[in-house]
Length: 494
Image (tube, rainbow, N blue to C red):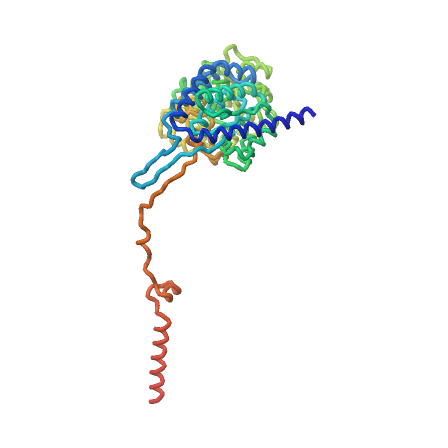
């Protein structure tokens, strides 16, 4: 009975939050650019002030990741994001093409639903709140149950900051009694115009099945190829920095390292020197069994954990200071568990003969759960980077840490915690999602060509029927027939 009551309360709360947020959004839609910027600046300020406390809350509640890295993510999702989106025109006339006499006007989408993952709960909430307000949308969050407290706190802080700067009350909402019923209600309710889904594959598929527009992101299974011209110490440093960043909880983090035979020993030595531990086949098997549950889903107790914790959980001993665990794999798929996505400090390690074999392996790995997302290559050969640009992903990250590169922290990509995988990965966009994905654009188009003076010449009824210009009319045919008959008669008389 208690569960039944909880579910009813959960669904009713969701309906109330959605109605309130939709009313607030209707008001926000009337705001001008100056008003919106004032609101966002205050949200960024509050996010900065609470970056540390929110990071601590997230780690304490979920057990995932590292406090210092979650602090960075909270600041990246606010201060860095703001600097990038500040010049974006998302209100009123955003383009006036004098030549083609075409005016483009931005309109908000309406009320958004934000699905929040347990791996990046506070930073994703901050990020989605800010891009929603920038485009004059309201947003209601569905938190992951295991990250409820920190997600709820981040959403409250963002709402209070927005309201304090002039936004309508309840412009940012969050379900406080999460349940599948509440999430489904929010996905399908009339008030929600667009869903932004960040989470597991099942949740993203559910968002796309809700019968309304959705921006979902698929999983990443990022291969990192160290090509023979690479700066090996730098490549290894970047991979370790990326894989240990928040203990591998970002979906753009590397999952497999691929090296050519000619570099194998050198790369292995460099990994060992920088804190990598190469597991024996037996140790690899123990870790793999501990990492995954059925259908290669990750064991939640191993997500975002340090190498030491994972080793201890698997009953193996590793040197003090070990940063990442590497397990050699000789194929992709069921028999090779480390060929799947691992949101933690474990890497698969592959050796190939040459770059062509590396190409084939990258495609197999991507098809094993990462199509459309990201690929990492370390090379000093620009032509080689372009060869790998042909692979089925939308982010080819060159000579950088993949986690930081994919979200735009170390590259020129748009700062984002929603990384689209395009149609290849089942997503509606291949972009790093920004406020520009959250607006409708209406167009005022003036006539610039007088098509009335370019009509084809008029034809007779017969010409129209025959479809041939200059065709003979029925009267003309009868006239010729009569003349022939008249001639024949005269010949007969003679």
